[in-house]
Length: 219
Image (cartoon, rainbow, N blue to C red; front, side, top):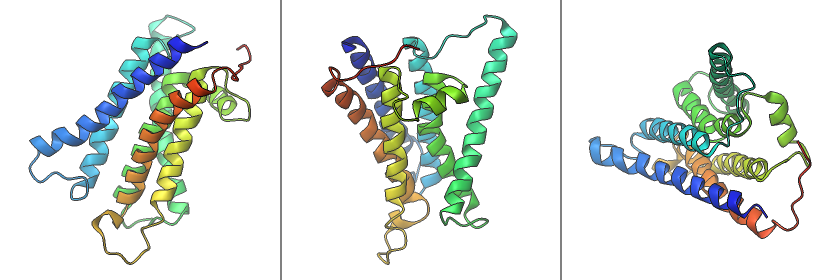
């Protein structure tokens, strides 16, 4: 049951993971002095852009993105506008949360906002791709027993892994090790990316292993 969807999910995740790899390797070849630590903000936006472009394209081609209720140009533009608005609001939300957790309010504001953009690209964007700009559907999926498809379960796993990775990545920052990856927000963004990639592997594997026990309510 759901073997076709699980295979499609695994293929999608491989493509997205490959885009992360290419967004890290290509700038290192083409941009003099590029490095994950030395030019960290450039790496963040390179990876974020790659994940956004590839995710939107792949989810659209697979037909995972919910179809528009209306086929008028005005409705589609309205939906696109709401998606962009939710993306921007998500960046501001993550920026605020990170500041409340102890990040500098004014100093390093660009670095903090860049981390927020990365977190939005790895989490909120997937919600937009899988569920569309529907906040009620988002709340449903992340409530207890709210998943109604394997893609909902996948969304729960990848988002959780990403956020936990970013949180764990903050632990080494105050330690007096004087390492380049302890600079703000390197360890958090690397932790988020490692968590995201872990979620890409763990989601289809967990769903495949538990596929006989999974039951979903009708939408």
